[in-house]
Amino acid sequence: MSPPSRGGKVLGKMTTLHTARLTLRPLMPGDSEAYAAMRFHPGVARWLPPLAVDRAEAVRNTIARFEAGWRERGYAPWGVFRDDRLIGHGGLNFVPEFGETEVLWALHPDAWGHGFATEMARAALVYGFETLGLDLIFAMTLPDNLPSQAVMKRLGLTYRRRVQYKGFDDIVWFDRDRAGWMQRHAVIPSAARDL
Image (tube, rainbow, N blue to C red; front, side, top):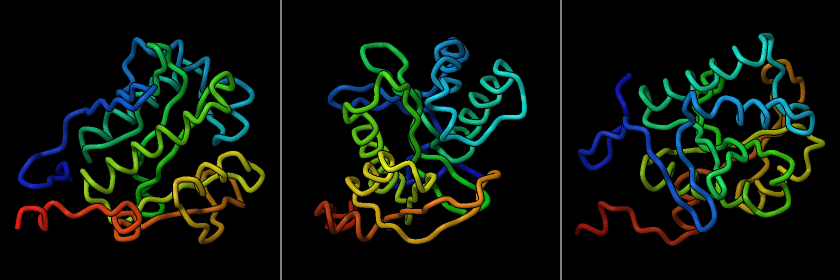
């Protein structure tokens, strides 16, 4: 599969974004230790699918999977950095089981309650809808993860259904389509701007 293109520009390179308070950049092998401390923190791990391999291998596999996403589709989750400190991961992730792209986030508990998940996810949605031209972006979480569901609602995503995924029998699914996003944010498609 070739990287997506938009307006003749191939989007297969790893992209870094900056928000008001965060830097979103692809994870690198040098981030492994900080990433493991976040990913395997008990407060974070309880919300994520269990991993069947040891920590070091899981981190290597995750970074390699994200790197492959950038290469193959032009997007993947970023490392989320605040003042040069890795506080989590988040961004866009293609989920083959559903044939759609998810916006996801996982932040170290020290970073909870500051609006970082909303800030990161909003930047990811802008990138997905306005730069990549994705038609639908969804988010999912466990039914009792009310803080993540609140983020989904703040982002304008709507609850649609329950699904099974990676060993979890009951996952809530929220989504937003591109047309609804563009209308809500009064975005004029680039083709119309060029007229």
